[in-house]
Amino acid sequence: KNITAVTTRHGLHDNLTTCLCALPDGTIMAGHQDKGFSVIGMDASKHLYVKKAHFNWNFGEVTGIHNIQQQIFLSTSDSGLLQCIYSNGQYLLKPTDANTGVGKSLADSSGLLWLANGHQLQLSTFAHLKKRMPLTSSDANANHAVLEDSNGRLWYALRNQIHAVATI
Image 1 (cartoon, rainbow, N blue to C red):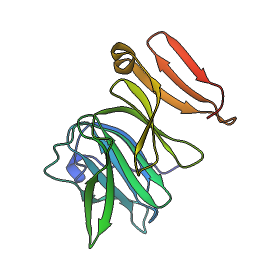
Image 2: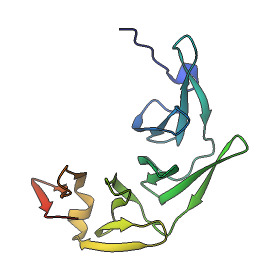
Image 3: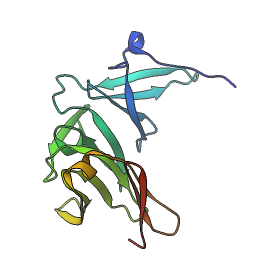
Image 4: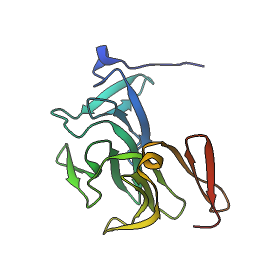
């Protein structure tokens, strides 16, 4: 196997990558802890390169990147959910109504986005948020994972417990 890598010496925007997402054009978007995101491509000789990086980032850690129906959404620790729009060679960020920090996010098999933020687990339909499950403040801060299984059950982890919701 031939393994190649890209680092900050090659233009990667941050040393700490928190999430990855395949984009419709075959590139990869890497979310970072402090400095936004980078878009990574592969040339004809199978070498990685940084295509784009987002500068002047002030939205906090990128906690998730989701490609849903050819739209890119970034969940962030400080600014909630952002829509990422590619236009004229630039990635533009558009706020959504999910404007509080998101700890974890999950795109389910139906193309909906679940957000663990504030004091609840929320379902984003991108037009507005639906409050699904109220969580206490300490539970919301301790929500470290969200998952949908092959049977459509939503799972989330709080401290030393794992919870399952029958069917979404």
